Length: 217
Image (cartoon, rainbow, N blue to C red; front, side, top):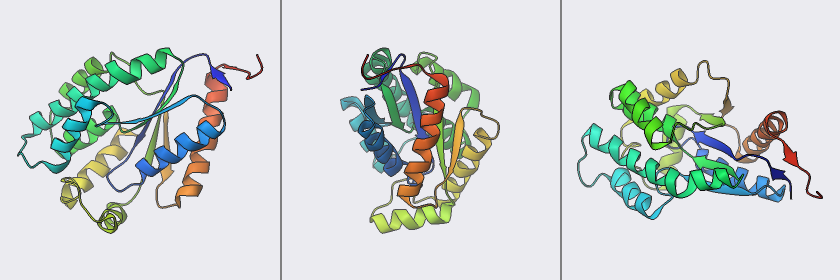
């Protein structure tokens, strides 16, 4: 098994219905097939606390003001890092996370118009000033994302607000205008093409930036 000399944190970002969750799962599978030690995780919902928070924010059966909504995501993120991310990075694991801090900037910052600087400050606090080594942005038109969501059979609280989702999509694009560590993928492609394209880019990045101990050492 190839052994990394440092942990790698990769975030998969995009609007609801972009296909990022399927991509995260497929990437985890192909990386494991290539014998990497991989953790597939997500925000919100990777921890026991996160599962409860995810149910609240996804259904919003209890009305939430924008600040309360963001702070729930921040609580999930703090627990996620303390319980999973930090220990796994220390163990030199390759982590694939379905969403991370940029989702809060896009959804709560651009979408809900909350104070951008405050979100960044709290994100840094909950993540112990750690940022993803790589971010994969799955870019897809809002119309296609909503069409996919409807075929799935149920819409999240966010997918029921098309104008809001359009603002979030524009927010992601603004965030990733000049980010060297961001890989932008065309989310209208089929999932197999998307997976192989993304895997190749990640493999190139790992070989360039991280020392790998050969499996026979």
